[in-house]
Length: 374
Image (cartoon, rainbow, N blue to C red):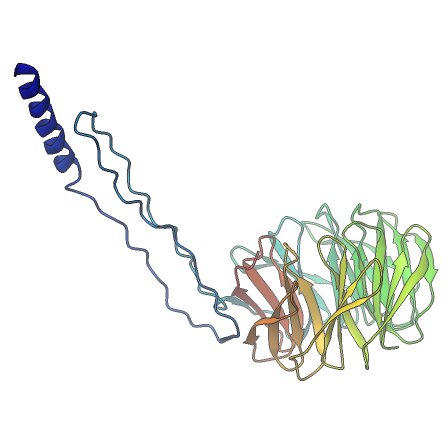
């Protein structure tokens, strides 16, 4: 009888303690910032949330334990497609805007003959680099972020020391405007593409000419190293994309599919795919090892000026003279979203985590949007 009474008393006490501990539970309410985006979503992205666990009943004889209720996942500061910032400072239209390897600095190339460096976090202008005597068509950071290369309509390439912006060298050899520059992944070689129809290789940091590669029959609009350093892709007004073997300096593939000038080309992060844009308003995605055409992406109504893969390689962005930036699913080739910029999108690029998309525009502005695609 005494043992039964003790067990009953313990049960009552445990129940009272449980009720007392659960009487003051609160859950934080996330704040949502209203969107001002001009995005035109094609696919809806639904954020996921973690459900709050249901409390487990504690046996009467157990010592009560309390597990804090998990807070909801933080809400992003911006909604999908929302404009984060607009950078203004150039007096001419933009050709390119690229991010440094550490993601801290943005470099923009303009028809106003200058390059500007911007602090990407604060969106403040840091430096204006002057030296070219005509439009600056292209810029590229070295892998260590210590050098910046620029190509110009004045037929020269300049090397600049960072972070100070001192001009180190002027590389001469092209006989017409330089439309593209790209560093090799090891930083020892610079590739340049020109209106003179050639692809040239330069030794870094000496600036000595290494080779001149011929094959295209019209001027080059783009030249880029693959992330693994084995290939260079070039796009030309002869309607083709060429792949070049870096070790042998030979053209190893000619990709035919566009029906007009090929303008931008880029590799996927794993070097397995090549994307190209054209005056025919299409984006083509190719397999780098076989040269096989995987997808033709249709949606733009005017020439495609730029293409860029997200860091994960799962999303492709394209910018066009039709003033739209478009996002595409790389696995399926399906359209994901489009954003109207108010001017031609001369260049697009993702930041390192894929949350932000940068668009350099023909009106001289740089727009940064939240996309959160990784």
